[in-house]
Length: 328
Ligand code: F6P
Image 1: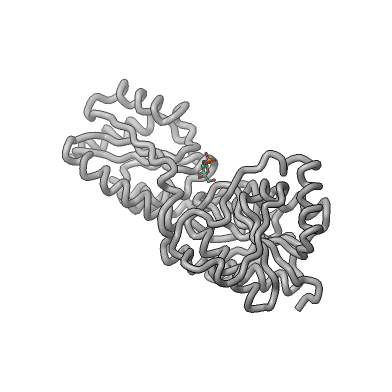
Image 2: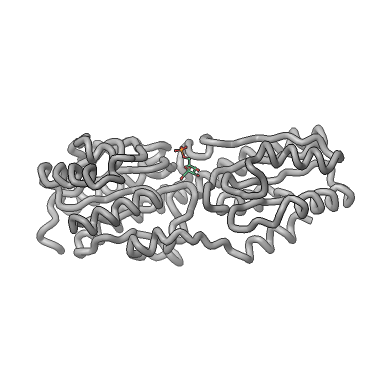
């Protein structure tokens, strides 16, 4: 056990994700288990710059394992992108006698943490929390499973009305750069077509496929479109293109938006968050730093921040095949 670490701070940053509370709870209670002091930092990296700190103990995190959002609140900090902002953040950590930091967030958070570690050599470990599942080196990020279930539940409802009116629905789901939500929720909800940023097959192919399935006897269709899909300028423009090129269906658009980020976390996300939170404190006590705690083949793994933020989101080709086969 590293003798140096006595006081640990924890924060959540970037887009919130269901299960972040369970991760905060696990970090705070793991600190208590190991006789470490724990400080909560509110409003993410921005709160770190503004010194928005509060002491936390096991009872500060009671009754939150089942709650969506984040008790510590979150922010996307522009100030932390500046050297000046990061200097203030470092000063605040030193003044509060904090020895190590746990950041719960996604790509942007880890990028900031990586730069901060390089500049100040301050021990930081990260826990992947984002509904997008777009972090390298971990099979799952906290919030992704809950978001998938939210999307599937919403599309099941859309299917009822689509089917009653013989309509085609284009449903936009989150994922600026990653198609994981679209692809998995699309398969789970039985979508006709799934459009993702990683694979732009073109609008003509979409029309051909929809026409083919219509003539094979389908009376309604659901197309899941990831936010970052490049087929059209946006989903409304894409809907216009479909209207102009096929008159077999009445075309409607539903943008699911931020409902995908809210709600009570699934059991999977709660367990994942608890494991990663405990793993983060274990790693700090082993003297690890500048890493993300991830999960791979159901085992806790340590991934360098530089590796985690690589950004080349890989889509499972087998899933695309399954989607193609099961949607005929
Ligand atoms: O990164 C998570 C995410 O939900 C993305 O899927 C989405 O593009 C983005 O955040 C939206 O961010 P904001 O709430 O800041 O508009």
